[in-house]
Length: 97
Image 1 (cartoon, rainbow, N blue to C red):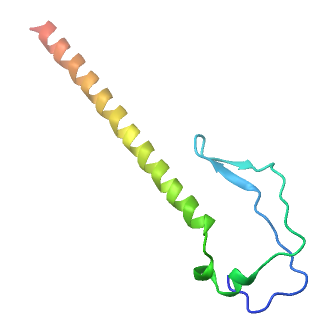
Image 2 (tube, rainbow, N blue to C red; image 1 turned 135 degrees about the vertical axis):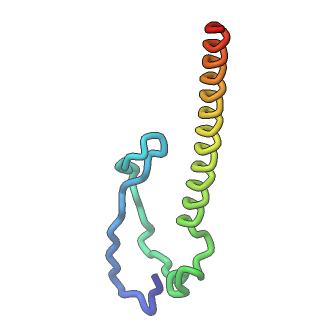
């Protein structure tokens, strides 16, 4: 969002939920939010590209890393299950002979 000129009184609506990465459920954020009496909105006049520390981009990157770790963990678990199943099949085949 790019602001050309800010009004003297600016109202914000906050999304007070986050994602629990273990359950993938929305969780209400209960921490207190405070703002300074005078809020510097100059970065937002430059548009999204003008913001130096983009928290949204950092969150997306963190989620991608988490997803990669979970995917790796799931692949490893599936490989272990497949190996265990193969061992049981081989054992059963050998017992039948």
